[in-house]
Amino acid sequence: MKKTPKEVRLRHQVLTRLIVPFVRIYIVIKYKLSFKKYKALNKKGPFIVLANHTVNIDPMIMGMQFPFHLYYIATEQVFNLGFLSKVIKFIVNPIKKSKSVSDMETIRKTKRIVQQGGSIGIFPEGNTSYSGQTVQIMPATVKLIKMLKIPVIIMNIKGMYLSYPRWAIYKKKGKTETFIKKIILPETYLEMSDEDLFYEIEEHLYVDAYADQETSGHLYKGKHIAHGLEKLIFMDLVSNKPFVTYSKGDKLKSHDSDFELTYLPTCKVIDKDNQLHTLVEMERLVKIAYFNYYKETKESLLL
Image (cartoon, rainbow, N blue to C red; front, side, top):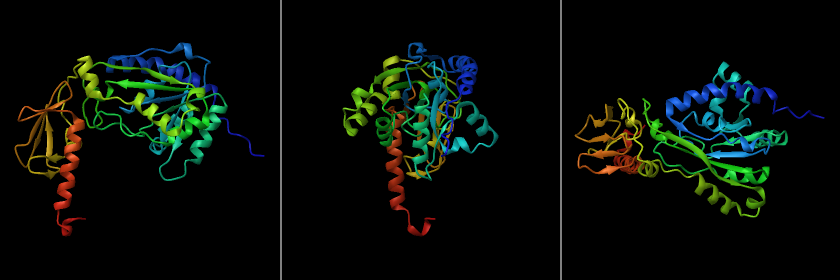
C-alpha cells in the first residue's frame, strides 16, 4: 500500500514565523500597509483563504496576518526558478497548479494538506490585475471549496495596485490596507448552489482601485510615475497605431502623433482635452483600437 505523503510539516510553521517579522517590517514601511493580525483564529482551522490579486508579494501580505501557515496554490512558474524553487518548496510547500496538465494532482495535494490540518491560500483570479479592477475569478474555486467543506475567509487587499501597478517600473508612495471582508461557514455555503456561491465570492472579492481611491483620498506619488504605462496603453489612440507609445516622467506620449496622457497621483490619467479616465476605461479603448487596427491590416502583412 502506497504511503500518503506528509505535506504539513512543523518546519513550515516554524520557518515562516521566523521570517514573517522581517517581511512585515519591510512591507509596512515600503507600502505603508495597515493590517490586523487575526490571532483569534489560532487553532480554529483549517481554512481556505481567498484574496484579490494585485501585486506579486500578495502571498506574503496574506500570510503575515494569520497565526497559521498557508499552503498556496501557485502557478508552475514558481517551480521553474531553479535553486530558489527548492528553497520555496522547503519553506512553504506550495501546491502546483499547471496549465498544461490535469488539475487532479493539485486537488489531491490540496486534500492531503487539509486532512493533515493545513490551511489553503488561493488568489482565484489566477493573475495580478493589469488595470486595477478584480478580474474574472476561476469557477473551479467553487468546486474546490465544496469538496473541502471547511470555512472560507475572503480578504480584500486595497491600495497595493495603485502603489505598484503591474505595468509600472517604479513603485509609488501611498497608503495600502488589507482586511477580512467575510467568513463563510460550510453549513452556509453547502446549502447554496454553485452559481450562488460563485457570485457570493465574486461580490466580496471584488475591488475597484479607483473607487477606493476616491473614497480614501489617498495619493500615490513618486518619480517617473508613468514609466511602463506603454505596456498597458500600447495603442496611439489618435493615429490608431500599436507599439508607438512611450513614457517619460508623468506622461505617456507617442512617436507617431500628438497623443498624450498625464498620469496623476490619483492614479487616473488626463488627456489633452482635460478628460479624466481610469486605466480600466483606457484598457477598454486600447482593446477596441487594437481590434480595429487588426481588422484593417492587410492579410499579407500578418505573420
